[in-house]
Length: 192
Length: 192
DNA sequence: GATGCGACCCTAGCACTGCTAGACAATCGA
DNA sequence: TCGATTGTCTAGCAGTGCTAGGGTCGCATC
Image 1 (cartoon, rainbow over the protein chains, first blue to last red):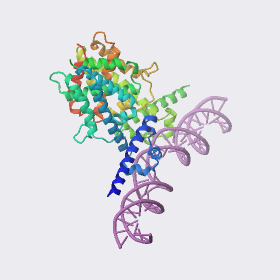
Image 2 (cartoon, helix red, strand yellow; image 1 turned 90 degrees about the vertical axis):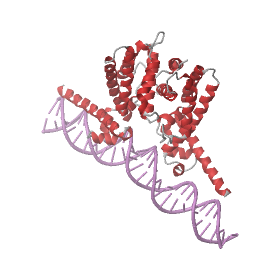
Image 3 (cartoon, helix red, strand yellow; image 1 turned 180 degrees about the horizontal axis):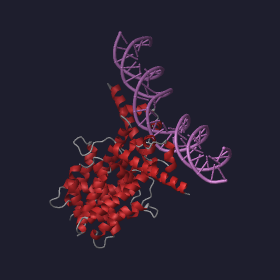
């Protein structure tokens, strides 16, 4: 029995290694550089080993996305905790969100740009994703305004942040003004 | 001389055919299905012909993006013209934008999601892209509010629309509520 | 401790991708 | 009519995600 447990531990460890290596490689050289061959070489196994853990490259991207979502949720909550008052919390949340996207572009891509084969906005949405949304929601409901559904407000707020994040990263928006854009956004969206 | 002119006309026509076919194929089966082989087969030429018009697949995507930008700019202006008053114009603009993204997902991807090798937010940004932004700007400056730079306001407004468009299309946001999200967004962002 | 079995992993290969070199044919100017 | 140039195609390269099959290792059993 203990032999089997050890094997499972080793398997789980190797799976984490795959995900961490994929993330690392993606951050270093972009997702295009994350090929199954290169990934296999870095973890010092052959390609087929990857497929004994994941159905394919898509699932690996999805796994990176889940890890990233958990990380982001924690960062968002920490940023919100450090702020005083609902409005300041909203601002801190927005800055933390864009900061995460800027510091972890590959992970952010895995979460929202690439196809990681993950379900969204459904009952079977993976927990880390729902939790990341919850981290936004619980810190925004106080500024949604009267008569506005907090969930809907959070969706709009999130979409705006997502737009800023992706357009900035793709070179569509000059990054120097990010701070002012956040200021304007929070100023207008957040009520009292 | 007229022979040369005819040849240039034919070349230009074939180039338009390539772009239109790429767009069509992408809308039908997604950009992944737009391979140089399939594209060449559809235009009834061999692959290398594509490379006599474009440096590579990237440039073809970029060409589709430019056509799309021109189309979008026209649609945005038409929608804005049909509305009465600054605020209603902003609303109409937002609906037209999301409508375009929903009706032409592949073109929208070419413009903002994929790498078409286009320069943005620079002096050498292609005219159609600058013009599409201008179409937003000229219909939003009246609702930017006092003391707010219209360009900055347009960027934020645009980012929010872009976020809604991409998250909705990727299944991250349920599409049923799109109308209410637009309502909330315009209601908060637009100042009288 | 030997043995048979099963889990595990690797080599090799498939069909596909974007892209290009070089041969060939059609068209043009003289 | 002939030579040169332009244009196009066939064939092939290196690389992609993914998989079938064989072989080797470590384990549970006798």
